Image (spheres, rainbow, N blue to C red):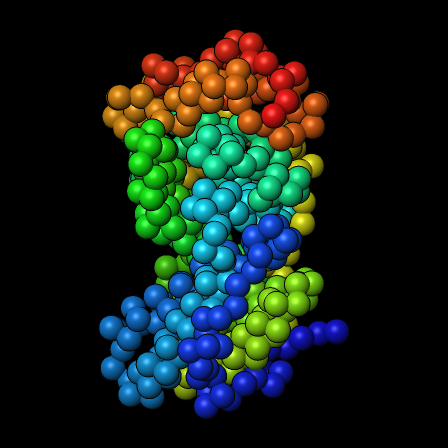
Length: 430
Ligand SMILES: [Fe+2]
Ligand SMILES: [Fe+2]
Ligand SMILES: [Fe+2]
Ligand SMILES: [Fe+2]
């Protein structure tokens, strides 16, 4: 049935303020929670952070009293929603366990969006970023084992493969060439706008999580690994946000933020089976319907346009989570050697010019070696193989994939070679 968020009944503002107990008391059991309940929890925390942050920025540029009052009231509500959601994670869930959850979000969310994206250029960009987060999951999985003795499937529950992707050392680019072509706000669909804003929110929060927690471990190599991957997430925020039409007005952006919150909560509510979280998604959806409808009135008043021109007349489905192994394998085989071109396009390794802008960055940050490569050397010393969770077919294709992924230039001295991967003892079990 069509769900038109401009017509559905929301929760009035006076009912949106909650008690401290209600805000802070709920938490899931890390050993029992479904991995996709955890990915929803991680994503919606990022959505709320973005909603809150955007409203503070808007407030600093706003001189309309009515708008200021709406922003002032709802900033507190977004903030309390964020607390409830983020604090669903129990205190015994380690930073690395949470980190595996973050990368599972990135892989399975981006794969879902890429397949539901009507703008071809945006889809290509999603596929490109997908292989980078896929590699992060593999690198962090080695650390989760070495620091906490856990296997990645304790978190990803066999739904997401754990194996190398485009090697992390090749994710470091000149930030200027990370910039992509923006969509045209008058031509693109609400789905594309919501997809991008959802992904930007997720990537931004992944960056923030690594920034705030990467120093939680004393191991020097692990600190450097967090620093390295955090910087890639910074590039991801730059890349995905550059897809947004920069001529959208602040009232249009406000409308899109509330609409994105409505769509993501609606999607979470529809998919959720966990009894603890389902009522939260339901209540927060009702809150966002109210925010959206007020934002729509403000948009009409200040822009003299219909909100339907921007958001359409029904919700989109930006964040359905399910196993995406088949799709990810397909992209991995086709695009492991893909790189960013200088004309907002994409190139393959064998097409890169000698003066490619990212070589300088890769050679500079990797001058003392690459933490993500050394990570594999360390676990190989300890266990004689790395931690991999994938089908035999995918594991067997590893040396070939590796050879394809290798760049001629910009590789660090400690790069694990395809031959070394081939020698790792794949027979050995944990
Ligand atoms: Fe919110
Ligand atoms: Fe990542
Ligand atoms: Fe990312
Ligand atoms: Fe909101």
